[in-house]
Length: 107
Image 1 (cartoon, rainbow, N blue to C red):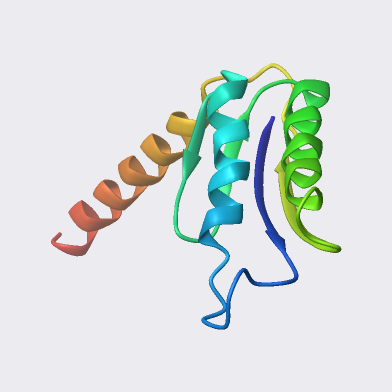
Image 2: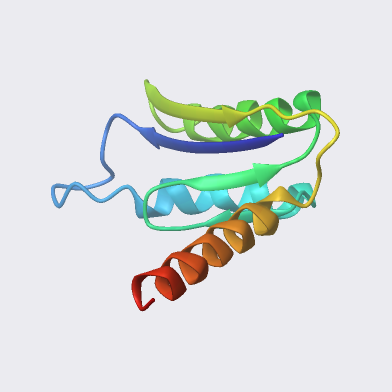
């Protein structure tokens, strides 16, 4: 399964509104988990079995809750039993489709 999630404290660390230090603590949890993952400017995506992915998401929330009275979580899951390596494979299929469409546009 793939889980894309974003977790952040509802209270910023300072008056700039930045939550980057808190988010870094959560991303450290993801990196230390050993699960395949990718972080971009809005979400972190992890790949694994249901229980191990949800345990990482919970741990990320718990780490932020240690310093914030409230934590927000956005989560999207792609539950597809029998498939692994989808963190990269989905992107490869997309790029292939874009390439085929590009070839069709020139015909």
